[in-house]
Length: 291
Image: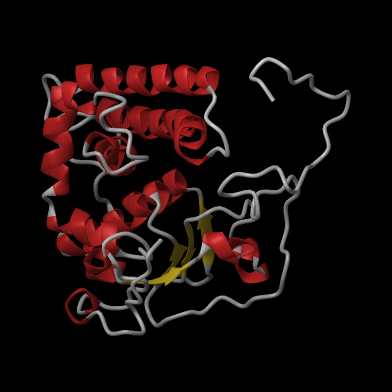
């Protein structure tokens, strides 16, 4: 089928065999597909996630909170294998009816609170601990500007460019050109903003950086979609500087490892229940895969 031969039907119907890397888990209906109780550990925060960019946002936040001395931010991180459909288990759907990682159960108060959507989790934790988000005023607004910029922009990078460039069953020029143009425009937005300030919202490291870096910082470092050369990421000098500086933060390194079940085995920590897990990596927590 050529790029111009498709005529949309009057009423769209689901073709479960449409192909593509995620065809077995994508579907046009919500809700649980099976009963599965989620595990719970001993810490106040129970995180259910995977080390995709959206998952990395939250594990970086937890590790940064702990590094800053917020001992009450201890957490258990449980692996949700989206390739196997774990996100459609009844326990996960109870926490996030949208069946997307990450999802958080906050048991630090008198009643458990479910928190879903990565931006909401970052705000929830920032406000709970009074960290990485100014309490009021223009500085707070600027951080939230960039947090919501990321939430609105990244789907064009991931579901748009990433899907058609890396995951679609065939490569079509029109969507790749369309979303490559938008990905480069977004990189240019960041590059211009970072020209005269160390962090995206100003002089202070914030949840805006933690939200943006797993997507655009890792794209700049050549870690997303094998697209660094194609998008000429080296040309965005200010993004490169920022991406490398954040990448060197120990908490960011740890955050990248948590709930990771793919890539370099040395960077995989499938579950995290204690800070010592990064040192011991016992076999029940680290099971290298070839994904």
